[in-house]
Every structure is written in structure tokens, then in C-alpha cells.
Image (cartoon, rainbow, N blue to C red; front, side, top):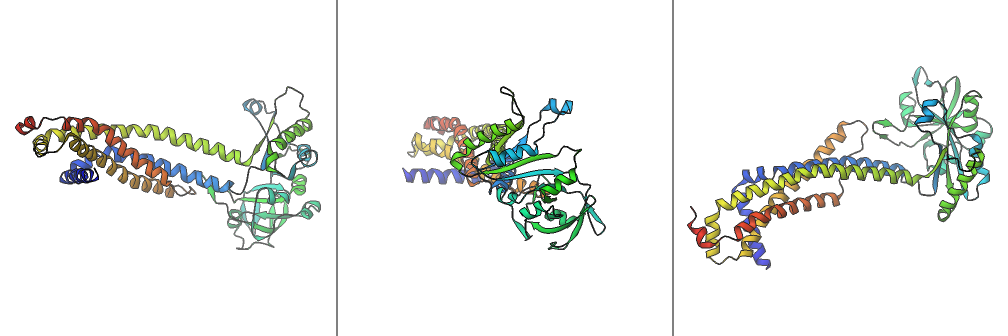
Length: 407
């Protein structure tokens, strides 16, 4: 059996090589379809891998509290805000919570240093942020509890802000202005890179108490809070206790909907993975239509090939070739045609995806899982086999005497 398949493979390959241009044009539909699928997958998977890396250090025991606003809230201007009391409720009233790191956006007037200016995101937080968010400094140190207690004018900055202000490579000890206040740089954070062309390093972090003072009493601060659960096994129970504590803090009555949400860090990642999977499936399904078109093209050309090789089929059958031998040869020809288009399409699709990713500033490098490449190649070959059945059956069913008479 193995010898028969080997001979059928040799005969199929020889037939394709004898008509190189026709073989290439026949497989063009498969090539374009596969290249399109791989290009889309490489971009989506590259972006997904980048997002995954951002959340890699945050496990399911890290949760975030933030306000919820719908279109009605924005339309009427009655926005919901997390309050300092809500943060205190998490910190002091919920058993099972380990560390709580409040985060507040500070509406500063911009940053300036030696005549240069920038507009970073200014965020006020506490020392717990480093533990909760697994944030590391490249130079210097992060904020500590003493900075918050003493309301020290100190800041930890991102690398993009350092570059914009043209600070030294190690900016620790430098003084710069945020709004009308002077701050001393005590740390430079590790680079996080860009997502969708947006830098994640253009920020300054200051002590939470200093941020509260800068906001004053007239402005409602935008606050969120991240916290860690002491025991991962109790994560859902702690989440529910935190929900009840925050509802009590916000004086929500029984039956009223929550105007806030508490989500685990990995839930953001799971939601993103669902989105990317849906995008990949939908686009793959749409582009897969071109694979079917390519399969129809292979079937048509193989039918023409069967007609052209009628006498050859008659001679081979007269020499003792069985129906299965003829069937195997023509099926292998169709599968090889489709597989050839698939393999070239995979290489071309990855090159297109890598080129597009390189042209978009800050876009993550393209990435194609090995499983996706094997799946694309296998599906291409399957298309060839499926659409090669009719021509192969026609060739195998020929009567050798009638075939030899064919002109």
C-alpha cells in the first residue's frame, strides 16, 4: 500500500511540474485566501500577545473597583464617582483584602523642566500600588507610606515623560513642575511600550495625599482602586463582601442597581481574548470563502486535466492500474495543488502581516501560532481533496478501451 501511494505521489508531482504555470494559476485562489487569513491572524495574535504580556504579572487575585456610567449619565451630566469613603470601605471593612491601592487622576496643568513642557497623565496613588500592580522601577524607588503621610512633593515618572522633558537617563534627584508645584523625581518606572500607537509611559505618579490637596474641594476626583485578595480560593467571596461594603458606603437601597463594578484583572484579559477570537473567527470565515472559490478552480482545472489525459489514463489502466490507483493519483494532484498554495500563502500572509505591523507606529510585532500555520496548511490540502473527488472519480471510472480510442 505504501509503495502504491509513493508511486501515485511521484506521478502526481511529475504531472504538476510538467505544467508549472497552469499549476500556479490553479492554486492562486488558495494562495490568496490563505495569505489573507494568516495576515489577519498574525496581526490579531501579535496584538493579543502584547496585551497578555501587560497583564502577565496580574493574577486573578487582583481586582479593580471603578464607577459605572451609561449614556444617560453622560447625557444628563450626573456622573458616578468612586469616593474616598468607598476606598476606605475596602481598606477597613472587608475581611480577606490584603492590599488596597487607590488611584486618582489629577487635573494638573502640565509638566515642565528647564524650559521644556509636556502633558502627561498625572496619577495620585499610594505605596501599595507597586505591590498590587507589580510595578517595578528602573532607577530610584517607588512611593512609600512616609511620602503620603508627610505630603512630600515627590514623583515617580514614566520613560516617555522623561524623554519629552529631555531629563537625564537617570532622572532621580531632578526637580520639575506639575502645574504650579515643584516635585522631585525619586524614581523612573520600567518601560511598558505602546498599545495602538498610544504610549503607556507618559505619566507621573505622586502621593495620594498630595493629589487630594492639588484637586482641592471644588472638583470631583476620578478615583479607582485596585486591591489584592489574601486567598485566591476566597476571591469570589471577597468580591461579594467588597460589593456589599461599597453599596453600604454609597448608601444604595435594596433593589437599586450597582453604579460601580468590581472586576478581576484577568477578566479584562479574558474579555479581550474573547474579542480577538471572535474577530479571528469572523474574518477567517469571510476570507475562507475565497478558499472555497479556489477549491472550485482546482476542480475545474482537474476536470480539464482528466479530459486532456484520457488516453494516458487508458494506457495506465491497460497496463494494470486499478481504479484506486487512478483515484489516488488524481486526489494527490489536487491535494498537492492546494497544499502548495497554502504553504506559499502562509509565508506571504506572514510577510504582509509583519509589514503592516511595522508600518503602524507602536503596533506589536506580528505573530502566527504554529497551530494556526499547520491548520491553514491542513485545511488547504483538505479543500484540494474535497474538490478533487469529482475529477478523480471521473478519471477512475473511465473504461480503458474507450479511453484508448479517445482522440
